Figure 1 (cartoon, rainbow, N blue to C red):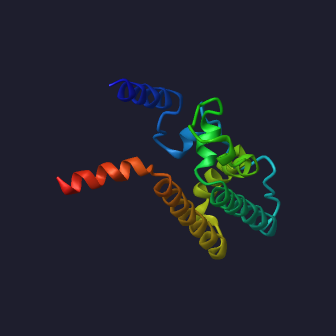
Figure 2: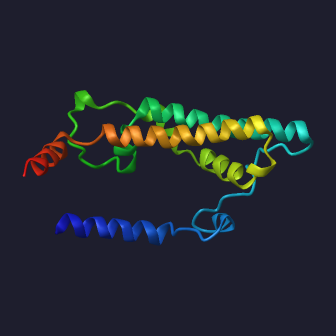
Figure 3: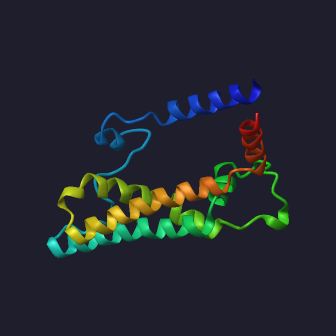
Length: 162
């Protein structure tokens, strides 16, 4: 009951700090404060705009590489750095090099801009964006499934034999 109550409290705190936006425009207000375009977005002409979008997609791809390299450690060690994870110090992977590309504000801004402007992207850029998004989902699923504890598998097997 204590764990269940703590999880409910965490979920309540998360939803009050970061409510689910009702529209993309809500992301441009508190608590998100995203911009329609990143500060360094070059919009002078069509070629500059295409290059800027290309750089935004590259940020997403870099984040995917960071997730692939850092794995579950990105979430375990950076969500609450003071938490006792139960991992022996010899087994701790320094995910510091990977955390920045995955969790950066710049990457979140890039994702927001690309989603807002997906209809105006060149076909090749749009294809790279969709591939990067699919890869993100695939990597997250892989990280989450590989992080399942062996204890939970034992309980699942007990239920099957009952």
